[in-house]
Image 1: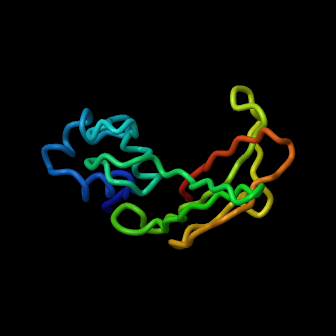
Image 2: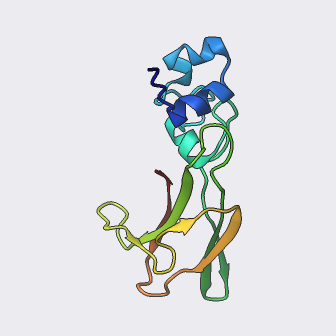
Length: 140
């Protein structure tokens, strides 16, 4: 019997790096950052960004209209090589203290399943000083 193990990260890596690059963990390993954009290959895989093309970290766009603060982002579906059977999830989390947290998911934005849609949420008005972050993960 032949047993074949399909590692989604390896499938993703193979599609994005040459054979020589894929054989070199300093270039294509999970902790490598070949485009020097500060995002490891493992995070590029989770975020859905390109490992050899410097791109900013996926971040929400924050706007102020009057006294209303909104946060919006595009929830990119996990698609292509290395994402078979995978789902990308997003959560908007808030805290009043960036150093110590705790980070709490906003109601209705605790687990946004990505389908290439734009997601917009209104930030809480109290307490006055609130920080937010966008958390992204893949399942299974």
